[in-house]
Length: 312
Image (cartoon, rainbow, N blue to C red; front, side):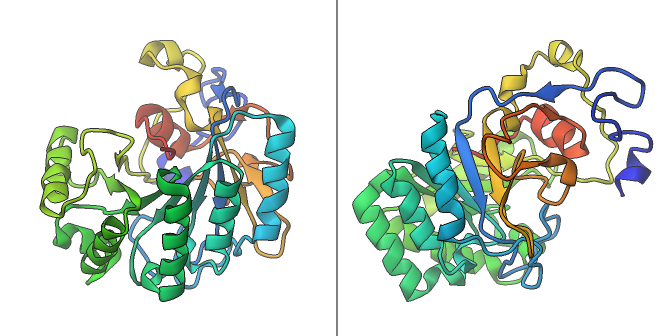
């Protein structure tokens, strides 16, 4: 529990436990609008930040009718967003995923889909849809495939026996069909960044994947998010101490739309905190254009100290 590991911390949005002013981040350069397609997933992974599983439907399937008003609002607001992201759960479980991707691509956006590239993506209907989209929109469509480790045993330890082999089949299909692929890994095994990138680089060469292991946008190695770990709170003074700027944090450049079970769609500060009400910013994008207090351990460890970003 957060309360046990960080007793007294992350309570007041305005002040840290020692009374210092808490850091906030304004939406200074909106770049990515995320849609959570639903929390249902075909597998259950250890450490999934959103607790996706075959039974978790706390976030319902979002639909084309749900996302269309947000795409319209983007145009009306004139935000400089150039990327629409789809995350889950597993996006390819959502029956309308191809239609939603096409709607965003048709409006001129780049589209990023986070997927495990397993059996669901290999269904003929989905494959035909992906073939049509890549033929029409080319490399404006990117699939970021979760590959927790470049070797099967560590990957299967996280995602279940046989998941590595399924993901490899999916990667090969995407490669052969000419889709643009990036990789999401995890910093779990005590390896240095250089060691991990060398491992992924050798894997890419072995499988004929045109992915740059040394490009952090093409091979993303995410820091772990453990709510039981003790982490420091981020004060306004931390920016100068750390040599960072609020603009580098994900909530300065993105928002996420979710559909909680039995509720209309709403806008959250980011992709990492789908269940915390303090990060719900309203029903519209205009309402969500306000500063976000970094009042959660994920804000500190993942975004500020870990330097992670979910976008391309």
